[in-house]
Length: 394
Image 1 (tube, one colour):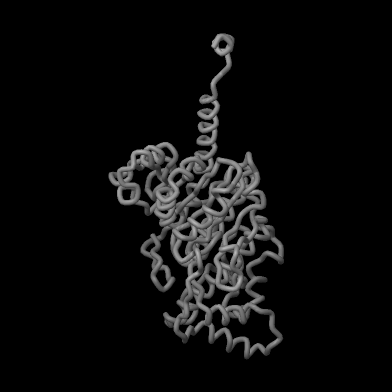
Image 2 (cartoon, helix red, strand yellow; image 1 turned 180 degrees about the vertical axis):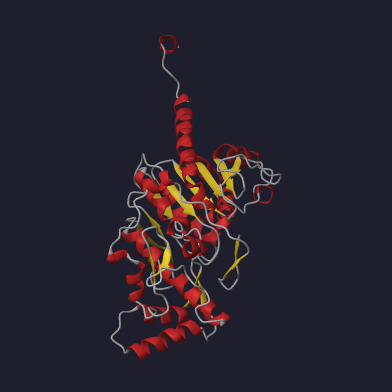
């Protein structure tokens, strides 16, 4: 078992390896093309932190040292905890920007800034496929991750660093959705503030430069030291995850032409979805046909109360995959969570639950959509000779 410490380190309590990415699922995903243009190492070379991070993703999408092929080492500066922690944070920021690039260049998603009417102040953004708002017959899949330092395109930064992009990023999920002809909306609920001074220093490090190597190293050292107070400003309409999701729902998801919207929510994302369900009750119940919750932090009693309509809706439209020692999809109902079906995610690790349950979730979406279509057609009255005669005689 591994436990991530607050400083980003990983304490090993016993030997434990993540479930292997299912072969049948991996085969259906066109993974990162082995090209220099999309390599993580080239991305790092554009910053002044190359000496700090000689890492790249190998053919298995695992983060490895380019010279030794060893996994990421936290204790780079021997026994200097604060400096190693800042280095870990800097790696997380590089991964954040790299995943954004993959969403645009590999998955062909569009970056949409919000609020739309503002352009001279800090703004958040999210990603969506080109036809998400206009494809009438398409399913729109919305991805909503847990709370933390990770941004759009990530289920878990820790999982990306220690287990690879297959497990920690949302790229496999997005590609599966696109291959199934879904449209995709990737939310960015944790992008709530901007630190103006840090943003300025960070951008200076990412710029191509002709400065001397010694000066570049001095800039990198300065960045890693973080010797300044935070100057955070909230981003309008994204001050909290709940505010971010409500804005994207009101201005984008609710305006999609089709009525087949599905959600995958992880951890705190489950609480945020239930908040949206309560706030936009009739809109959500009419447009969303299936919700896959993964190890969710929601609380039905506190959030939905005794609203019979909402309780009936989640019973028929929600399913949860929870961390459990049981095999994938085995019933894993708990005393606290019995409002809808609860099954095992096939892993005991919260950060690996999305990748472990992904194949099962897409099967659930397919089955739920088929059931919804059947119910819709069954409600349409069928014309018969007798009914026609009754109309004519009336």
